[in-house]
Length: 95
Image 1 (cartoon, rainbow, N blue to C red):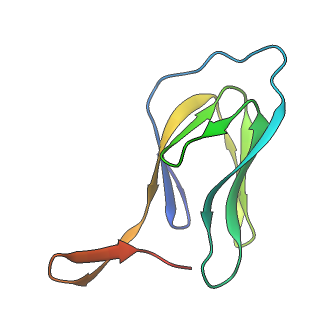
Image 2 (image 1 turned 90 degrees about the horizontal axis):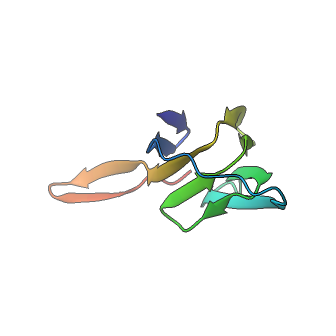
């Protein structure tokens, strides 16, 4: 698992095939509500549907307040951290 601030990437073990002509792509996993910063992934051929990030080739995960992480080819479930508010109520962590 890869923790990057309030974002958690859980590898599924499904490694996608990389197309020979994979174009550079960028995905925003989460926007900072207060700071305007974002958790960005940059790499060739990657896709993100809001819950699943597919990384067919090595990619970079970056954020202004966290270190750079190199992602290996895999399919990742993207989980946003949640915080307790009151009994039976949680909300996404906002940064």
